[in-house]
Amino acid sequence: TAPEPEPEPEPEEEGGSGTSTYDELGSWIIETAKNTEGGIANVSDIEIYKKIKELGIEHKHKTLTVLAQTIFDEKIVKQIPNRAPMLKKLISSERHEKAFLGGTERFVGKDHPELIPQVPAILLGYYQNDLVSEEVLKAWGSKASKKYVDLPTSKKVRKAAEKFLEWLENADSEEEEDEDEE
Image (cartoon, helix red, strand yellow):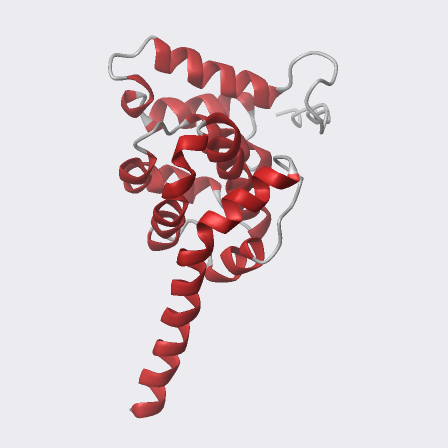
């Protein structure tokens, strides 16, 4: 069989010429959700995964940025465990984890600012479902970034995350104490 042609490099920034494969994925998910009774919650992971494979972006970290922005709605906290198996298949490195957090930041910061108070619960869901590691969460929480949203929004999202990040620190030190006592 002939080797597959190299995919075209994606324009990194939005507003590049034409639509990128990632825009296509995002639009497809949003469109499918509109046409599905019960909305995005009822668009199956299998369908989404098939579309990602069809577009040939199942190994790309940017795919996770798109997913974080499109596969949840205002009930994101409840939806994380259901989406976790598919997301785990796609998250294969720290870079993927960071892209997923970036997409989440955009989802709550830009699209659903009313969800900002739920950031601790969202991050806890990611953590408990092994989607994002403790190291990546701590690094993310330590510094606002304008990579995915503007700086004030990034700061707002991280401010909302403080309780979770404190919990993460404390959960850590408690585990160490338990080990010392044994």
